[in-house]
Image 1 (spheres, helix red, strand yellow):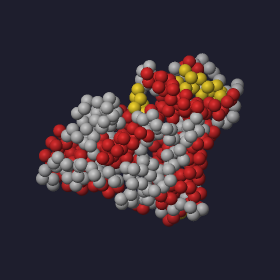
Image 2: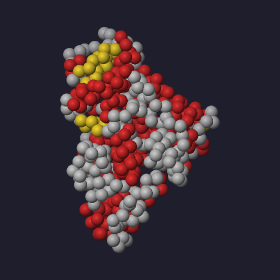
Image 3: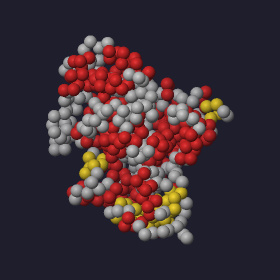
Image 4: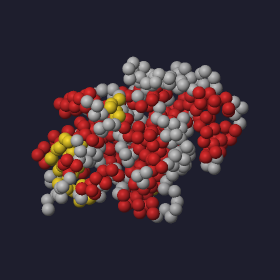
Length: 501
């Protein structure tokens, strides 16, 4: 039987196409009733429709309410195993022929074999990453790592340039919108009016690649222009430079527009040619070949209920309105939530929420050490936070966020993904960003009207979670410091009553 390849919305690149007829379905039920970032829905629809136009007569492109309208009753479908539990249930219910998943450096079988070989040891990303380097030969010189070290993280923690508004790099290569983007905006506006979807965030120009050609151009521009500075300033943040030296290719990669191995090869070639330092190249390869693959495999390894069944620190606070509205009052656009009783004044949180409102994206330190740290300190329920990250970020997917948010950011799994909570006070923010300059809060103060909510929040977090964390050897020093605070009770009470962050 001649089979039709049913490609999903994150399988839009040529490496998911082996020739033959294709089926592509734009199902409105996928976003009906959800609150999404406008840039996310714009990018998703633009990518789907551009792929349909590029494929021409080879694709049967359907725009329907439900997948079932197109796929039920068919016995000719073939599917590359999709990237979520829900989608995998669908294709198995339909009875499609299932091919192994693609779009990652390592296969699910590779990871399972490695994990099973650990004989009860922790599944550390660092160990997995080294095995993959050895297996693929990426950044290897014989049996030794290029540059003499496996890990160059220690070199990649430079502060942002003092007094600088930006890194001074040329702006990234932005996509040029076309008639499909105009059509998408028209449809989204109509769906929003009709109540099909609730959207937050700016209706700005599309900043992320929606086609393979755009994605390949973005990779080439990154390698040539920003890769050398990526490593040193990987963890730094400047309020006036939202892109810094980051690649901006996580979204097109998660849409399946480009093969991560091709991206890795391009970055590694820059090192071989002497065009980029090892610390930048290794840092980037670690993110794509190490962390990204690791998150993908943990999604399946940890199970579908991982996000909802793990809450080791007893975090039960609802998602705050300032997150749901991205720091904007819907009626006035001011930095206050819809209830009007919680005001965002701290520059770090305000500027990060504002950047997310404008772009639907922020880099990993803003996600982990500003948004994630704030939610961790205040005990936001982890599965709700994970879903918020999925819905608000252009690169958010059901497989990428649970272990990143629930495990690494919120430490809700008790140490499966990360050995300690990623909690910090204002000193870290002051060192690695320019947000503290001019902020009305003082990162050195934990008590009083100008006490930094990040600094004070850190101690309040330790007070709340100390009984759970006291058995963690990496938290002993922090908990010892908490025990020695003369103003501990006053700080905890202050943070319990705080309405201005």
